[in-house]
Length: 267
Length: 331
Ligand SMILES: Cc1cc2nc3c(=O)[nH]c(=O)nc-3n(C[C@H](O)[C@H](O)[C@H](O)COP(=O)(O)OP(=O)(O)OC[C@H]3O[C@@H](n4cnc5c(N)ncnc54)[C@H](O)[C@@H]3O)c2cc1C
Image (tube, rainbow over all chains, first blue to last red; front, side, top):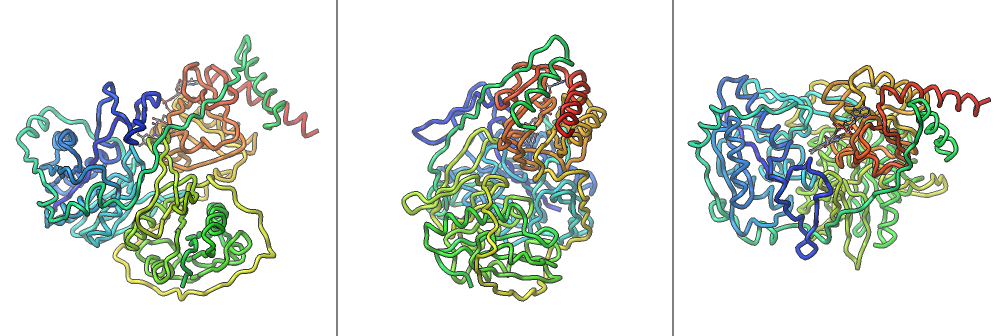
């Protein structure tokens, strides 16, 4: 079984939001040197899902792919240290400033080039722009079925079985490979890289593919091929004044709060 | 067939009635269509839809495409897609609105790519600026916002629950109903089992009061106290992702970016730090009240009232005090 996992490098999403700054000239989030880039958490869980499938089957080849400039090689290395077998870095000036569509286009072309992929995994959304479009976009462009929001996944023969999260519950769905599945956080915490895997990872191959390697035209990709325009990016302020309840004891503070909620006609 | 220049709403029904989010989308659709001069159309697929078509008209739609039958019992993208394409493709609307829930988030990217366009997900606002649709959505876990326009059409948007106010029901409105054949479609994905629990107590999305607990509730016992408080206020219980991950409460009550969105009159945050990803699900609450033992907790920046204190010490007397005041008000 060959599993392809698409991962994205982002700034740590749990960083204090006070550190976020937008560069008004470029409409981009400024990189803060005190915050290290990470693999987007849902994507890391997609790598974990692939590793669990391999653990269960005893055998599977796991290829991790990312679209990004050279620093994005770090997330491939991180995934290889977790146990993935090989990496593909989609790197070309023409790929720069993509939207969800041109990202899906490049990744689907790369998965097509890999050729024998049985299962594609992505996170449910990237934890920077939170769009959640690339996964299903890849599936549409490859014309394979997609299953979103997986909280559990297993493979039996050629059948992929997924528990997917829905409002107020979950459903169990099945599909024959090849298919794409997006992973939700309910799948659980990813494993940590072991020293042994990290040592092995240094010798694992990372291919670098350009627009040409994917048989795409530069005009189809990156910012040129994008189907949306980013008109503005900003940080809204929502700070309000908090009225802290005082009191000599917990009981007094609680009573004051209860009284204020009635006085202000909130209750 | 839909008319060009219009706004198409992909609606949803729950238990024979139009969903709240569908009503909210109709209000936005009405506003946008009044600018384009097009119609508001809606497509609704499902089974036992009751008078949802009547609801759609009363809440703002001009023409309804409705497919009611066993082929649409449960949502499955592949099963619904051919019919949606049929409605949308021949005479493409200018804008397609889809609710941002587990169905819409699953459906919209595929529909958009099939139609040769793209989608702006989880939008909180949309308006025409110099003839171009501008869609605003939150990103960076809710800490930032971006405004997008489209180079391709139609503009497909998923709309975040509670971001729009529904119009008042107007039973005098007239509309046209176009029945769709509920054709069964061969799908590659197959639903084997569906487990939906009727959530205990008041529904989160419609509750006037939501009591939400986080890591600071210190365990399932803390959630029992939070439930008692929610019941006392006639409210619903919610939680942070950490509390759900720790299995102190069901995962289905997670509030936030990767959970549910609520906009109650009162949101009581108990032992919740106020991470942007959590606020993404409750920032629309009219009043937030926080109890947290850390005076610098982010949650206080969004709260109108707060107590710096330990939930375990504050909650029992708070419940007592609220019960006394409620009984006094009732009598
Ligand atoms: C991509 C992504 C998506 C996410 N989606 C969501 C989401 O949908 N919903 C969500 O909630 N989170 C989400 N998160 C996680 C989010 O970033 C936070 O980690 C999470 O909300 C924190 O939960 P918490 O406030 O319960 O815990 P903590 O951040 O640990 O805060 C606990 C708080 O309780 C206080 N406290 C401790 N003990 C007590 C006590 N005895 N009495 C009173 N106060 C006490 C502490 O001072 C602290 O402020 C997401 C994260 C990412 C990266």
